[in-house]
Length: 190
Picture 1 (cartoon, one colour):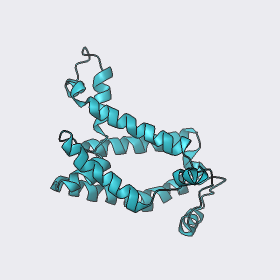
Picture 2 (spheres, helix red, strand yellow):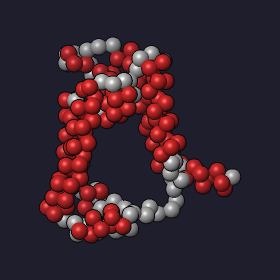
Picture 3 (tube, rainbow, N blue to C red):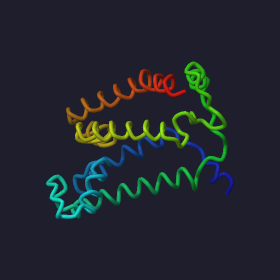
Picture 4 (tube, rainbow, N blue to C red):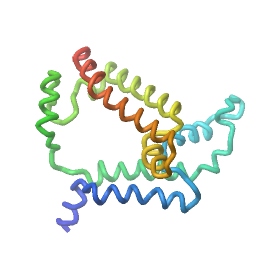
């Protein structure tokens, strides 16, 4: 029993989790030509709760045809809960020397955890940063007609050229954010 719990608490190696994620693409294509994406679920949720009287054409469609996608998103949330709460690793996270050096260079104290308090404490500044980041991610997802999982997993495996372009943009934006925006946020807010 202890061996099973230790296995559940340990991160899965790439050679197990990678093929499991990759196996989802042929499975979803086999069960009905479906895409491995999550971003359209927000549109489906808005179509469910938006009354017909409001009359926004973007939400006027039969969302029930996409109910499988909502079940998929619910499974992702449930899986995250199990991974983060039920099977959470009780050991403290050990950051690499490079990560600790990076935070030290930015003059950001780590505190007792691994999240910089300046961004993850509950205050108006962190809420503003998270809201702004969420708006930018939402805009980018809508502009690119999909999210990272839809383009990088389904789009690339089905050889869609627009997905290759989207993945380049996603990774370029991530690198720019990590190396330019985040250090400036720390210098401004800390």
